[in-house]
Image 1 (cartoon, one colour):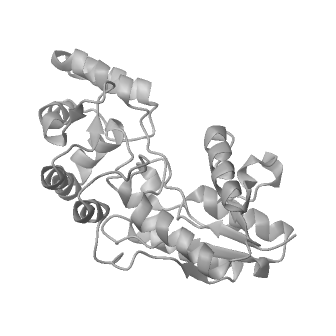
Image 2 (cartoon, one colour):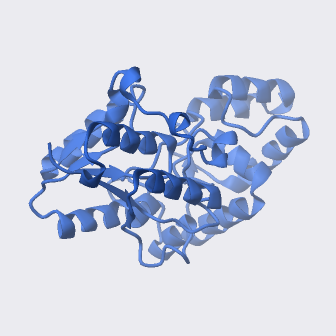
Length: 280
């Protein structure tokens, strides 16, 4: 069948991909590739989870890291580059911290393109499945998506006694806290729970001279512009969580803070609630 390169992101889906493959094939044919992120943005418990999955499989974690991963936050990486996005529109921190090290590793370690690249996208992410398979296919690599298998074939972390990262108690993913790809629901949580991350992102907007977010017309919307609203929401008891559908979340916010009803409606139009999982 060949060898598999699992993009071992620290999320539950990618872990279950590795577990599922190990059930079908020889685990020695699996490589767990990870990109380490500074501990103030990727939690200690997420790092624990990644290692527990690797230990269960009896495999090492192979790292393809940004050279200053343990010193630079995603915001600092973007400030150093003077932009939030690269020319193609990809968020620059994803490109520098993950995509570029990933492609460099592949070019150096699999020049003949023999590895099968494995991603944790599921049946709700078919557009991403198509896009990723096309991108990697055009570069010469095959892809596989075990989470698209029949549910009965997927090995769940609960079946092997591994606890999900505690970040899932609030978020629906194990991405960086303060994900630069995230919508306003995510950033409301950051405002309420991580003022250090919020303030660093405001600093980044000032340094770069442009906002992280834009409205539906492409007009910049700065974090500072949302502080008054978010504080009113916090005081009104709007729960900072992603475990509420974004439509319900913003409906609750409108009810709680009626003065800002129009602004909240606009935010809902621009927000899918959770951020996309950083690719590769």
